[in-house]
Amino acid sequence: MYDFTYTKPSSIPAAVQALGADIEAKALAGGQTFIPVLKQRLNKPSAIVDLADLGLRGIAADDKTITIGAMTTHHQIETSEDIKRMLPGLAKMASWIGDTQVRHRGTMGGSLANNDPSACYPAAVLALNATIHTDHRSIAADDFFQGMFTTALEPGELITAIEFPIAEKTSYEKFRNPASRYAMVGVFVAKTAAGVRVAVTGAGQGGVFRHTAMEQALSANFSADAITGITTPSDGLNGDIHASPEYRAHLIGVMARRAVAAA
Image (tube, rainbow, N blue to C red):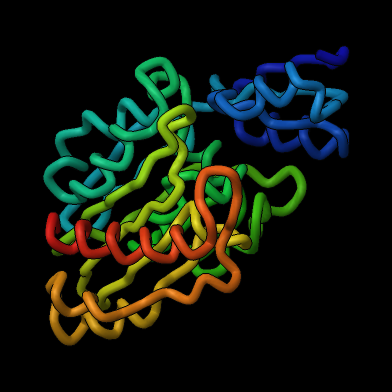
């Protein structure tokens, strides 16, 4: 690692001030992406601002929404009785992230801020049309994700919570890389009062995206049979040593049908 200064502020304004005072400063949430990046010398921050003491952990539910604090861990989401009852697809998603150690350290806010194109949470946030709350504004899911490792967050802006509407049906299916457990393709399907949304992660070159053809078909008939004949163009999909764009296009259909059947 390179040398850097380390601070652990006890309030959100102090954390925002520390990040704003140095353009090269980086925020540390769970560290499950950031620490390996530092070890590999792929990033050279002048300062690290630890967010652990900001009071951003916790899950609050009412009859319309579930709000998850940005520093809430995957394990807390996976085991929350409220989430398992009201958004079971999100609990399933959290249970499939990494391994036990990762799930006890990694956070939802850190994952969303990083916006890895193979991360799971972006698919849930986009499919459920969640709202991302920051230290000074609220951002709709459709506006938040802006490309690979790119979001609508401004320099120094911190995610504080993510607010999800309660859904009638949710499910997530993921074709996992056997080594990293990242999604080679993951599909989250959600049916809410506002309609049906389908979000795909792991496949697109620009990161998470909505599958509008499947949304239209499922809005008319919410069944796996309704999307059996829908194909996904391979143009714009990822191709690497693990899977070609054509194979990922095939997997999108398989994972989507499984998600709908499970929902």
